[in-house]
Image (cartoon, rainbow, N blue to C red; front, side, top):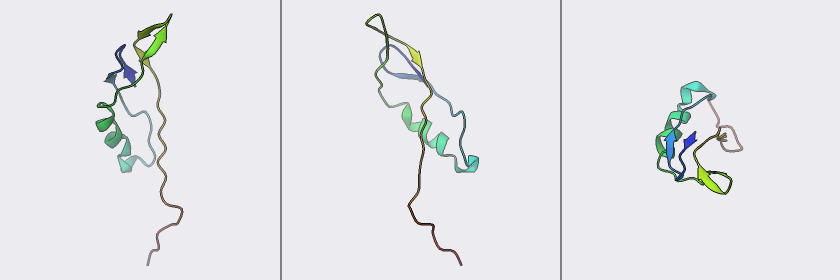
Length: 67
């Protein structure tokens, strides 16, 4: 993810997702552009930054019954 010095998202992409057919990554990055982040800081001043943001989605604790 790339964030400018004002905290706005200026670039984002999915690097890896499993299972790939879930398309959760595309769903997330479709909405993350609306978020406002704290930018990076260098020498006390806000600067643009790049970072990896790991999201892990988990389901319920029980598996659904089949059959």
